[in-house]
Image 1 (cartoon, rainbow, N blue to C red):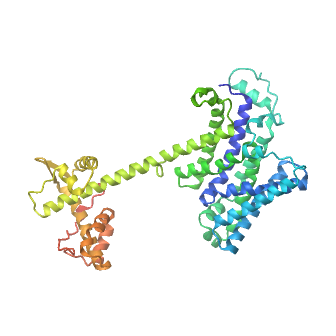
Image 2 (image 1 turned 90 degrees about the vertical axis):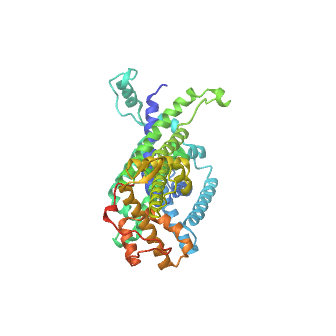
Length: 471
């Protein structure tokens, strides 16, 4: 793999476009308006056409102003249609963006001879050609660009020149950072609680239109460089990945930019290496070349999949572990309750071996074999002559569980008139989520009964049965 100065500028441009989109996309995601970026990308067309007609120029400034105006107009018209037509926000947005996009297409066709806009460039971008359009040479480095090592590469990058699109994206990214920093508190409150923002004197609608204008300017600035497909991916995917990793907005913004930057650099590396790694014989069609923008989108998807798997709180692995742990805890508590009832009934003939417990509780063998070592490790049961018995510690925990169960049966009978033959199942579910405070409240609401509706004794409250490590 040969990494040139042009590759460095291509990666830098991709990073700037990605992090600028990720900043705006984080707020769109939190406001549940992720597809607003897609809508704005369509409705920008009439704004860009009008800006070109008025200025006869494709300079960045007029294009950004026209895009921002079109984006704000989209948001205002969507809100107007929603209120007037009494339709859902998503339906109103669909009506507005399809209409404005059609208007833009008509305007573009009417003025096709006077407007130089390349649809393929807008759709796919020209990221691989960005480095060829120089705006200014940074310095004339005294180091020979052909020299080996880091300094030689740095000299080549500096002598290469700053591309126009890189300069534009630096300005747009800087504007995004500046405005989000200045209005961070207002954007945060308006995003999570618009009513509270209004109460505090913050105009939530103004913050919404500010965000829309930022999205519009970012989208139009990135279109020529990376194309609409990658822009939409960078608006949503890094923010979604960061959302799975943290619950703090400030951390989410930083993580979204990190994910976007890693995806941009990784996409550039993949665009260079994939054609060399994957032979033509694999798919029958050789990877003669790949575009950087498409590979960035692929890498961002891979990064999101990894985050989705390993996220500490919302990942698939952590959810699976939590679900298994909960299932085992319930199995352990059910076993304790079963052994307590066996002792309570003085049923000496009842078999309480591992297979017998699993069969009685309808547990899968694997769950039973995993739950029993947990009870023995907690010193709540012990094995005597092939049968499991409660220890003193296990007896205290089991008594609390059975007390919760029978208090729930009493409460459901007294307060909700649940038939007696239907009390057991809901009480069995609720006993596993009843803490000591809730148990005391149940006892107060049921006048501290001595027996449950089925005539079974309710174990008395014992403070020693509260064991914080039992689970």
